[in-house]
Amino acid sequence: MSRTMPAWLVVLFAALLATGTDELVIAGVLPSVAADLNVSVGVAGQLVTAFAVAYARGTPLLAVLTDGFSRRGVLIVGLIVFASANAGAALASGYLVLLAARVVTALAAGVVTSAAFATAASGAPRGGRDAICLWSPPG
Image (tube, rainbow, N blue to C red; front, side, top):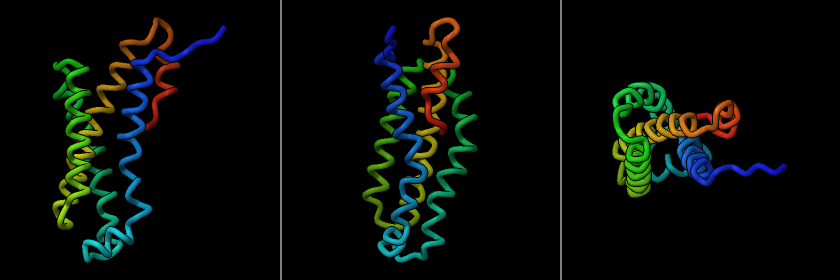
């Protein structure tokens, strides 16, 4: 018997993959980023740290604050803010602008992650919640 994942779960997985990889995607290009922004590689590395701290501190708080809203709406707004903040990061003219964009990106990723996990858990068939969570990447 073949089982396929529902389309909504594939969409959630793709959203989690995008938001989950954003934290470390910059790590491979830190020397180039540092050179472009005229800062040391160590200072440029703080872009990864700032993302991680904002994500870790902001996700639980934002999960509580957005709990009363439609999960679909939260996911859509979160992904729009995530994409916009990434575009802002790509266009950043200086280090502080890039740092701020990375923090906003991290907070949006946290919103998306918490809403996606809640959606996956509530949409899982009875007894299938453990299997659904196995398909989700860690944040």
